Image 1 (tube, rainbow, N blue to C red):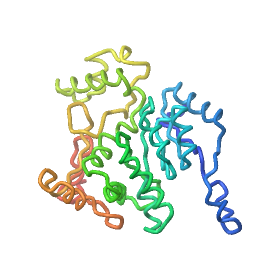
Image 2 (tube, rainbow, N blue to C red):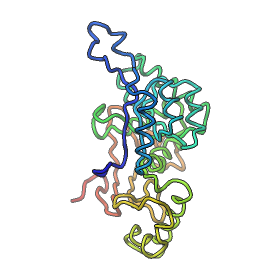
Image 3 (tube, one colour):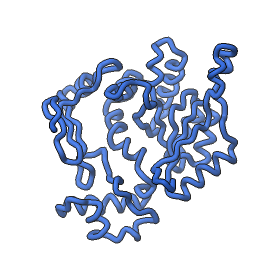
Image 4 (cartoon, one colour):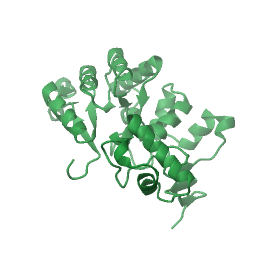
Length: 287
């Protein structure tokens, strides 16, 4: 954290004996707790005290319930979560976000036990409703450019495409944003950013801080130089835009799915705008 980390990730459980697969495959596949509750409490509370959120790699339902009770901000995978764990996430005071990484498990093929369990947990979460999702996957599980397969898998498992679009855009920012964007202080910061943008400031961060309201009044944690709202096309948010072909208003799910491609078809958006600069137009990169 002292070196500038924005997040802390904890491996709360893991198949730590996976290297023993040849001699004891059943034990090798078991996810085992890596830390005691007291150790997890110390890590989560220390990170929060220093203004940093905590994500946790966890698969076991018991581990996920414990993490929610201890105040974790995001759970990665959650492969074996049952209804009780999902309800704990839904009703958590910190509004935990679950990143189910469905496409990671789908890589194992349709008959994999991991596909069966991940699909079951995700569909139970959809039935419960009101659970916040993140759209992400393990680094290195599939090639760069296939990241959109997570969105495709969510829709294949029954999620409404409009919800998936929200989870992948503004929901992504809600997941990764810093603690300074939470609660009443965060709401006032967003208002300051929108006001700065409406007044025509190019640097909304500096304008909101210097021209609109003293940020000391908005919370304990100041903004970082890379801490800008993203995931929505509105004043004060980063001008990061991906354009796709098709008419979502008319064709809805069909247009969205066609634009995303699939597990083996990389996502090739015809338009990419980063920080207001056109980087790709009509499918061609611009230098």
